[in-house]
Each structure stands twice: as C-alpha cells, then as structure tokens.
Length: 123
Length: 123
Length: 123
Length: 123
Ligand SMILES: [Fe+3]
Ligand SMILES: [Fe+3]
Ligand SMILES: [Fe+3]
Ligand SMILES: [Fe+3]
Image 1: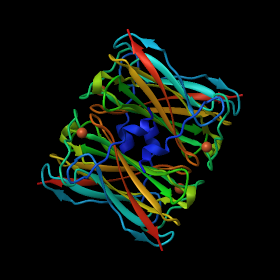
Image 2: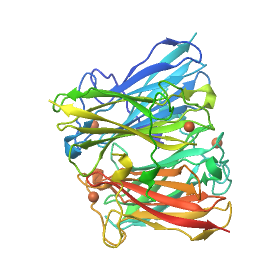
Image 3: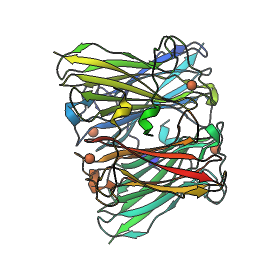
C-alpha cells in the first residue's frame, strides 16, 4: 500500500486535523500572494509533548502538470519546553505564473498524515 | 485528487528516483537497528542546483496500525555552492517493538514525490 | 572557531540578509501571539536557484535561562521550479509565560548565517 | 547577545550532548566521502518525549571562506510514538574540492544548541 493512501482529509469544521487554507481564488500572474494555513481553526487540536501537530508542508501543482512542486515546510517545535508552545499556523508568500492546486499537508505525531487542497486561478 | 496520488514508485534498477532501502528483514524487539536509504544506487540521479534530490523522509507503520509514524527527515542542502555536493544517502537508527512497514519517501525538485517500502519482522 | 561566530547581523535597512522581526513588545502571559519574520523588507534579496534564502529558524530564550528553545523552522523550497518562487516570509504563532528574547536566524545559500533578536515582555 | 553564543561544546567522552564526528582526515578532491555523526556515543542521551535530541545539522566551511555552507539537516522525530524511537545518528555523503572545516551542530529540546568540528584536508 502506498504511503499516499494514508493521507486523511475531511471537513475542517468537524475534523480538527484538516489543514484550513485561506488563499485568494484568483491571483495575478507572477505576483506575490499570501496564503495562511492552520490546523484547528474551528476545533483546536491538542498541543502537548504527547500529542501535537509537528509540521505543515505545502505543494503547488500547476494545472495539467505531472509533478507537485514543494513550496515550503514549516516545523512547529515547542510543545511545552520552558512553557513555550508553537501553534500549527503559518503563512506562505509565493508567486506562480500558472493556475493550479495548492496542497496543504500536515502531520500529527499520533494521528498521522492529513491534507487539504484549493484551486488557484491566474489572471 | 489527493497529494497521495502523486507518489511514484518503480524498480530502482530501472528508475533512478526510487529510494533504495537496505534494512534487516527481522529485528529484535526494541533493539536499535540501522537502515540505509539512498537514491540512485544503480543509476545516479543528477545533483545540480537545477535538478537534485531535496530530501528523504522515513515513516514506520506498525502492522495493523491506522497511522504511519514519522521516523525522520533528511534534507540534502548543498548542490554546488562552494563546489560542495550533498548526496541523497542516509542512515536511520531506530527501534520498534512491533513488526510493520518502513516507508522511504523522497522528493526531486523537478520530478516530484517518490516512495518505496519494506516489511520488517520482529522476533 | 565556533559555528556561532559565523552568524552575521546588521541594520536591515542597509543589509538585505538581516531578518526583520515584527512582534509585540508586551504580551499577555500564556496567550497566543503572532510574530512576522521576513528577509528583504527594505532591500529585496535575490530569489533564484543560484542564490536564495533557504530557511528561517526561530528560538526563544526566557530571561535568565541558559538555553534557547526552538520555536520553529521554516524552509522555503521553490526557487524557480515550474516558475514558482517561495518568498522568505513567515509568521509564527506561539505563547510564552515568561519574558525573554526572540531570535530569528536565517540562511542564504551563498552568504551563510544571519540573525536578529527582539525582547518581549510579559504582563 | 548573539544566538551564536549559545552553542555549547566539550569533550564527548564526558558530555553526552556533544556531536561525535567520524570523518576521514584526508579526502580526494571532489570524491564522495562518508561521514558519521552521532550524539551519545560514550554516554547515551535520553530519548523520550520530554527530553531528546531533535536534530543534527552539518555545515562545511572551505578554508579561508567567509561563510559556512549547509550540507544537510537531519530531524529525529519518533520519541515513543507507537513505541518507536529514532536515535540521533546519521551519515552524510558529500564531496568537496577544497579543504575546510566540517561543523556538526545539534539541538536537545531541554539543553539547547551544541557543536563540534573537524578539519578535513584535500589531496
Ligand atoms: Fe492528533
Ligand atoms: Fe529528478
Ligand atoms: Fe545572499
Ligand atoms: Fe539533553
């Protein structure tokens, strides 16, 4: 079975692990856009040493392209050390000349891999 | 379409992107084992700024478990800077008390996501 | 010579590599705060395969503490692949119960390690 | 105070956090070499959710160069999840055309940043 079969998804309003993506639907060709991705917007996910979101990783696949391109990886590393807690929330600023799909993937150290996606048009 | 659908695989003897996994078939419960994972053992993959293997990421899924657990991520970051080149080759040392599947995934900045897997028994 | 000796700094208004930190000066104990960190706010840094900012890494050191705690690491991975470019700009959302220093460090694949820091008070 | 001031070091025979570097003293110009870096060779470091080595990061600075170049980053991510434990031990395979210094840095989630270094000659 492919590791790909283990990416889980769902409606983020009912499932606290699903990455929530705030992105413009239409962007200007080659201009910088800001996207916000977070876990637990509606239902907070635990943030403890025992159970937390470790990372969010973003890919963009231009329409019709065979391969997704990685935009960035965001590791959340404080989960109680010295009473510091990093929340699973990021922005990514990027540009594209082609329309396509933005994939947000994430990893919970207990509940594994999750994903969400959104289409972005270019004008 | 799930990001999971973009993991590619194949026979590493013919396809230079497939991670090659050298691991013991049987390990002792809870004892440290060493696994070697590399790209391009038979057919070298390019290693240039324009085209290279960015990372290898390893997961282990205990038999029957619903979620894969991430063992480690290995980023290869020099691709010609100051004439330095990091090769896509790592070892991981880990222990498991349960048999399961070791997944090796990797990413080429041009050709996307790849994977391979191997079953490990525990005695 | 310690690797620590290679962290460079300066005024971000004149030196394009220095991380710019936008953070509140005073925060409420244990409440989530949002910090924005970017490279090149005044003078843009190149973003090409040959020359780009690879990552930003954030640490927080509580006042008087011996060790800095890592908050997060943010890898910027698209530098022209499929005409996609990830910009060196992030937010981090975190909480602290203690005042201290937020360190932003970054790495340019040509010009090495850079840093900036800001003090945060807790009320 | 620079974040660089927080890198700690010592003799790995007495201090369990110091990265141990196994590398050849002399290498052939541009040929691949294998280096092994680990924490806790003589005195094991704890490996629990509460206290563990999170990562090892390697840099190489060519003799006389102003900037260190990052070779790779190695994240150790299982610390008890599903009874899996990743140990802080890696190999890096790389090539250099110039002699210089290999820096191994690491991070303990409780005891902060550590480093060690070794000179490598080129023949
Ligand atoms: Fe969870
Ligand atoms: Fe390739
Ligand atoms: Fe630069
Ligand atoms: Fe420690």
